[in-house]
Length: 467
Image (cartoon, rainbow, N blue to C red; front, side, top):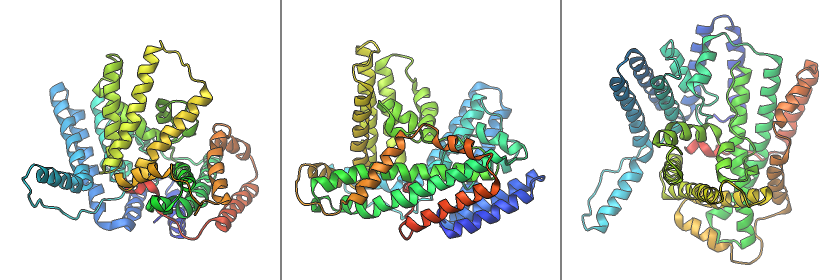
C-alpha cells in the first residue's frame, strides 16, 4: 500500500476520522492507531506483523529491566544483550544470504569448497528502520536520556506507527513517547503544514522521481554499454535528483500524515545538494539516520576526542557500516568507503591548514555534489561490473538515445529546489494558516488535481523500501 495511491487515501481517511473521533480516549486512540499500523504493514506481508510485535516486546522488556537495575555492570550486560538480539534479527533477514555466498566463494578459493545451506529468506519491508528505532530506545534508556515507556502499547506504537514504519524517518523515543502520553491536538498550523508537505511530497515523487526513473535512469543503468556518455551523465545526474525527490518525498509525506494525526516528526532532509563539504552533506541528507550513526556508533567508538587519526578511523568504520546498512552488497560497502574516505580527506586537510578553507564555497558545493554523484553510481548499480561500465561509458561518445529536453528540464527543476529559500514550505504554511478554510481547501484540491493530471500512470515503489 503506497502513499500516493487511492487505496492508501481511503485507508488514511478512515484512520483520520476514526482517530479524531477517539480524541478524548487517548488509550483507545493509540490502540486503534496500532491496529491500523499493523493492517498497513500486513498489506506487504501479513506474516511479518509477528516480527514487529516480537521486536517491540523484546525492546520493551529489555528497557524495563535496564530501568530497574542500578548496578552499572548489569545495565551494560542488558543493553549489550538487547542490541545484540536486535542486530541478530536484522542480520538473519538482511545479511544471511550475502554471508553464505561470500563464505562459499572464500572456501572455494582455498580449495575447501562446500555446499552451504542457502535459505530463501524474504526481507521484511522497513526492517532496518524499526530495528534501529528499537536499538536507540534501549540504549537511550540505558544512558538515562529517555524514560522507559509507561506501557507496552506505547513501545509497540513507537516502532509500528505507519507513517514512518517502512522508510523512516527514524523517530526516537524521546521525541515520540512524550507525545503519546498526552491527548494530541490538531492546530490550524499543523493541518496546513501537513497538507502542504503531502502535496509537495506527491509532486516530487510522482512527477519528478517517477518520470526520471522510468524514462532515463532505469534504462541506462540496466545496460550502460548501449548508451553514450551524454546519456550516462544525464542518468547519473538524473539519479541524484530521483533519489532525493523519492526519499525526501516519503519523509515529507510521513511528516505531513503524522501532523494531520496530531504528532510531530523531525525534519529528515535540508537541501543536501547545497552542502559545501561531505560532512555537511550528512548533516543535511537523511538526518535521522546520520544523527543515529553519529550518536550510537561514531561517538561510542570515540568520536573525535583523540585527534584526527582516531576520528578518521572512527568515521571510516561508521560510514562502512552505514553503507552495509543500506544493503547486503559490496557496492554499498564501497559507497560507504567513498563517503568515509572523502570525509577523512576533509578532516586531514582542515587539520593541515589550521582550520582554514582555501576552497570558495561555490567550488566546495560543486566538488561535494560530484563526489556524491560518483557515490550514487555505486549505490544504484546492481553489481560492481555495472558500476564500472557506467564509469567507462562516460568516455564513450555517440548518439543520444534516451535523454530529452523534457528530462533535462526535470533534472534542472529537481536541483533548483535546493535553491529555494530555506524552509520554503514552512514559509508558505505561515502565509496560508490564516486563510479561510474554503480557500485552503480549493488550493490543496487544485494542487492534487494538477499533480494527477501531469504524473505518469502507476507508482513505482519508494527506493528506500528495500532497506
